[in-house]
Image (cartoon, rainbow, N blue to C red; front, side, top):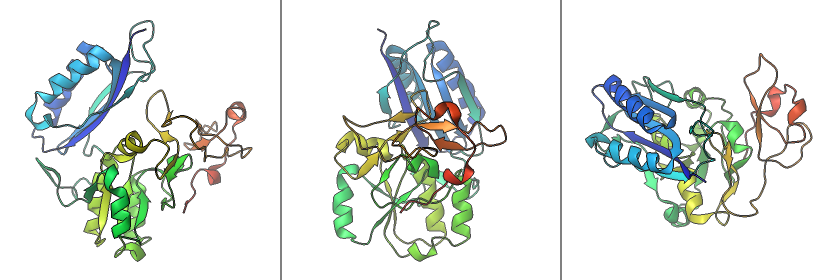
Length: 301
């Protein structure tokens, strides 16, 4: 069986010609037969691509030869496989686009980057440092930097989960003062691979949050280190054909089907054409999903 891999990566660094980088990345992925999604802006690159192991390694090598991307940190996981045409089963197509932001917070002019990354973002906390940070800050709170539906199937114990449908909602909630009571509280933000927290911590600091940190490498790196034995509970939503990831055998299932309330880690797109929501839905109820927008955004504490 052909081995396949999925890469998750990002790099905040100034790019003077994002369109030239887009063309190069498109041609590189096409030549290697990789599929996935890559966003490029003047702030850097954000991508997840998959394909045959040999092609993935060639992609890493070629991308690192470009000086601004030399020290990209790659998160690598096993892919599902290839279809009969040799394309990744985890991604339907290749998409490489230039955008104002590589994470769509709706604040492109607020973010400042240099060759070292985001300027004045939150302090990076490595997974192995989390327990010491908690010991040093007994009032520390975990703050989820993802969309709220993702937290319904997996989150850190006791985390604050803002009621967000998109990353734009974080700016609205912060500007409305919803979390002003935490401005002097130690906060450890977390997200899938770390990129959303790079921006989130910067915009929080811009609004007066004085002690904001971010989980270095995100949930992916934490789970690689601790599996099911740390503070992370449940499954992780990913944005490829796998949809969710577990970390080790017999993971705790914390999601509840929006229809029957049975335990599940599966998400399902709402079947009502006018509804863009995703719902936690067990396999048995998947064929009879109804629109219930009230069940898809909950603040979990």
